[in-house]
Length: 315
Image (spheres, helix red, strand yellow):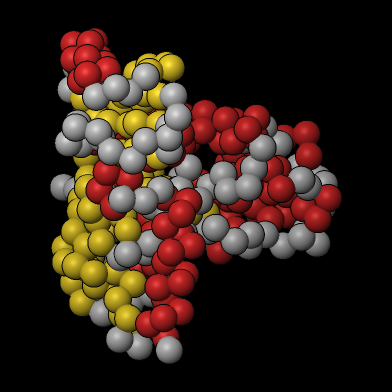
């Protein structure tokens, strides 16, 4: 049985579809990523999966339970780390965790044991008795994750778990998420960090404007694009005979299946057109390149486009 089953999920706000006929499944013990720009629908999807929003239509089950009819049962099976901080800043780290454990009906001994374990695992054991208001952003994020797994959920939802964190803290959180998988925990995370999705996720759903536009393993998604060939030329050009080439001033970019074989042929074609080449580079694609090939724009750019488009819809 799938840990998460989503079929034809739609969520509308005043006639605007934040999610439009979204379908996917997440296997037990899988790290599943929702990758896309701000405003694409990632957080809306997470809120429905954790029972904070009701879907407008569709069938959604988490841990085998319907998120609408059996919301209480779903909540007992999941842990959640929201994008926005939800810690009590006037309590210590240990007090925040103890309060959470009480909400889940954990006994005193269970709370004591698990609090010690999660503080150790997330690297904040030495600050257990420190008020959270004195924590750095990275430490607060680690405490949020510690709280999310305190009651040993079957499924953990992480909404932009490393947003705004420094590289060192981000990598520590990545290590912890990978350790959760080893323990059999199913993890669903949203992100717009390309490296994060490639590093952590077994499969990635690329979401844009409320729709899933691609879903596969990171490697398979990248294989759809092929290798990326970039050629810098002398001067500025506006056209060449290579059909799939994208030209920006003095740079020509194209996707090729076998770069080593393609480079000599491409170079010959360009030289025959009188184009002088300064440099040639070949690289493997990223998930950003996949997104660009599917939408024609970068993830960071699309976030701003979404906001503009949304303002237009509201007028």
